[in-house]
Image 1 (cartoon, helix red, strand yellow):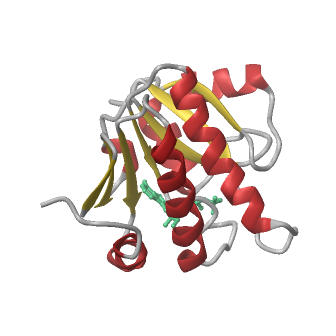
Image 2 (image 1 turned 60 degrees about the vertical axis):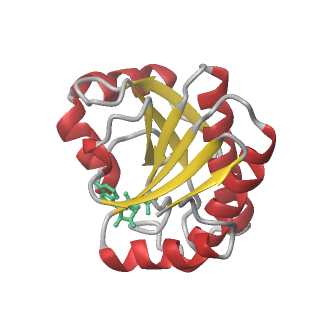
Length: 178
Ligand code: ADP
């Protein structure tokens, strides 16, 4: 499913984010930038040790922040490491919004045209999927209304259930592309 916003688009797909060839894929990172399980583990396995080395040089970032490394051996040339909230730590909605927004801004600053997000914080960090879909999609829609840089924002959902939740939410946001 995809929708158009001005001359950009939001697209939903189901699959493994590490297989995508967007200019950047987003890692659901932790603030120490240690690539552990979930999306981060898949990125480490497929992208090689170079990405962790670059993360170590950066050292870390705040919850809601985003930093960029190369994509190592991945098809995507860059990885944007976005730190989502851990459920229960407080102010989770704002932090997820900021993690999304800071990733979009960073991609634009670097002149990237396409970016792919996972459902940040909905794995190990325990954030509810429907709220993640609401926040990440609303933030992206609002951002694309005013940017001229980014052309394509993909949400890559790992399973059918997550895809269905995002699809339902995106259908509320605007007209579907024919
Ligand atoms: P967090 O620690 O932010 O919760 P996780 O990596 O544990 O991050 O999970 C975030 C979401 O990404 C979960 O919904 C999980 O099912 C999904 N996920 C895990 N591996 C992949 C992958 N290779 N591609 C896309 N999504 C993935």
